[in-house]
Image (cartoon, rainbow, N blue to C red; front, side):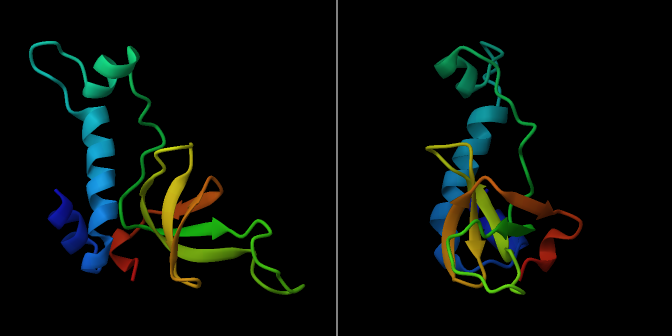
Length: 120
């Protein structure tokens, strides 16, 4: 699954750790154990997983710059990025910021899933 995510979205190999984390996160919430008819997340937490916030891996996204960097009066308040997955410690998304070249976590993200192969 990880190799497919990287190849399908034309992402470089150094995102392999992000694809593994995202794959585990997704599989724990959608794969059902045949005998128990429950997902691993249900067995662990005792409640059904909410998957309404899932987005297409590798799609283009726009990350709100909420005061992290000093902005001029006419500078854009969003940075373009690539969606890489979900935070393990909060309800945030993990995105690669194309301007800063860093992977960052943010809750303030808008996704453009119309053509995920255009993330480069």
